[in-house]
Length: 459
Image (tube, rainbow, N blue to C red; front, side, top):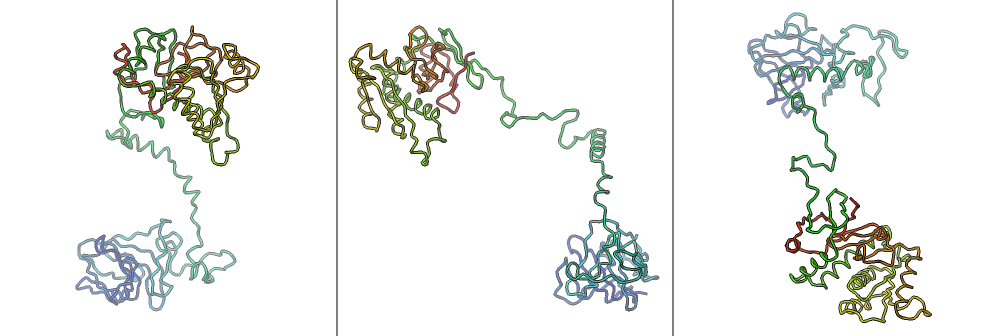
């Protein structure tokens, strides 16, 4: 009889548009194929109306959560699929949902949750669609566990569940279930099936292993890299290469001077070159002195000291320009400049600017050594005997002679053929345009990348 279902707790799924309703059955009309729920909840929220009526054509699925038989309730996880056709009201045994003209199934999934109906007695809160509850009948006794005998109601655990824990006697074995899943075999079957159907396997082309790229590799196809991008009409005795493998040929001293002369004729004056060389040499010297690890506000009591050995020529002016920038960066600078010869105008201008800084200028190494060539030799000997490493600016190259052995050498625009005593070679960009290189017959593509000073290695 339809009246046997009154008072039962059901869940009605009306599809994605209307949603899911839960409540207590108050009426079932066989003639109009309708069912009414009292105190309904819509998608977990209590409805503002006390009663809702559903037609059979709107019901997609009906789950019987709790069946009322007289004054007793029987927990059930029966689920009934409802089609859009009219459905007969359940008849026969009121404890079963098999007469709803739709197939009945009991779920054993461990993923279903407890259903908690706000505003209803806590008896409505059941763990449905679980193996522990759906596999037992209405009068089946609970096995003995934790000292509780068969047929006895388990005590309440209000702090944890707020109701009798009769549905938690069987724990789901997650580890055992996971051990039954062979991930490699499943993916292998998926790959075989997709290849057999001519489909791609998770975005990978058929019979093609995906290429793995490093974080610094370009994934786009490009033209083959040309490492010899600079060619000169009169190559020197040596060739160098950068860290990225670009070949940088050396040039002769005469071609180097001609390149600087044409650059000056086009507007790259000597003063500009001196300033650019001084800035690049300063940046390199600051890095060699410790860089950001040493030049910090907390390390002002350990200011480094730099000694400059400068001559009365263009290379000497470059060293004085470097000393001025170093002094501006709080470096203790002591500049040695002999005063027994006439200096160039550019040297005089750089000395004037250097004297405006905190740097110190001296004209002798020892008081008992007279001025003259002996003074220069004494300064070179002092530098060679000193334990401090030496940085040489714009060395003249092999065959020109160099009295001081350097650990590093900084060349301008293109390197000369330097000897072993000149140390490790670095190259700085002084801003010569490509058209100037073209006028002297040099095919030039900038090898500096994002830097103005780069190291060179013997090819």
